Image (cartoon, rainbow, N blue to C red; front, side):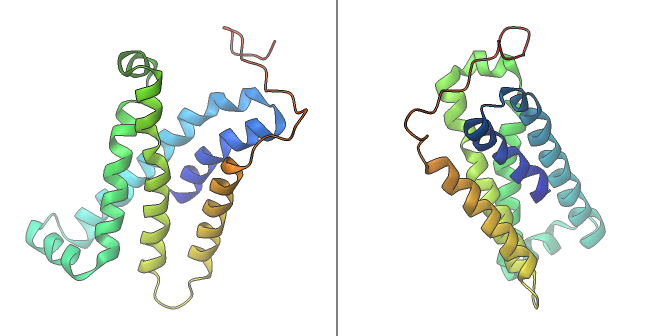
Length: 161
């Protein structure tokens, strides 16, 4: 799940750094893949770990903060998946849609934190995921170099002109 989510977050920096606009076509697919993996992870937690027992799940949330953080991250992905269509972009308007979809940064942070708190002994893998997320977020803060051409907009057919 984290792989899909971080791949989703890598699309814009890759596009900005290289001017490769065609990569934008896979961003929605990557984001929805991350959501479906998170859904399967959450469903397996509910069914296999707790047999759909609400009291057991509530006790687990109180006892283990990584469960709460993971659930919060999953809840952040739900509106992003629902509003991922062109119709929702039109209905919300571009600016409001973009503002809503900035939740992906918090969801990714929650996913990394969930993984980090979940692991008991060797935190190497979660630290790598955290470093990858930090790098992706840092790249977004870097301005384009002076003289760098802006990426060309996609034509209606979906290819760069």
